Length: 216
Image (cartoon, rainbow, N blue to C red; front, side, top):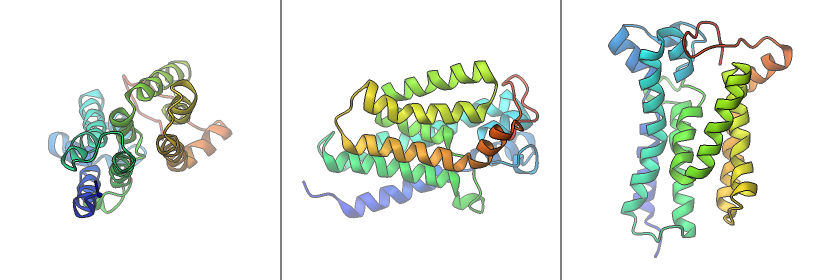
């Protein structure tokens, strides 16, 4: 079946707009009267929300940011009538993940200044490869438990994604392996300042029970 380009482009725009929802900003302003971008690391993401407003705000923001990456990828391809797991189907789903993550990083609803995309990326990975997502979550949890660095945990989880797809699950799809590598590289790019602080020993540790000083 020929790819439905009009619907495909419209879906990518929709995915970008969903990704652009500045969850931390809107949640903080609506329920706490606080713009998280004015406090902590000034980052519009779940980590800074935990830091500034605590778990009561951080947990729902994290959950919604994950859903932003998950729902468009699971729902929108179903209306294309493309054969599941076909080449066009997989390309389309990867494009949707990319659109939601880019929306989170550069949200049109928040002056194109968003978070670092880890939670939204996780949502996309859960949609396209739940097994690999489970490994990424496990790696994040272990590294965080040992180090208390969210940034290091995120980087290790991102690195685990292409390794899991290519080596553990031995996925034959070059599209999925390539996508995993690109998404991993994107996480490293958004955490480039954190990497420098980690190398210099200047990154702050933190706890989900009370995030106050971490810059992630």
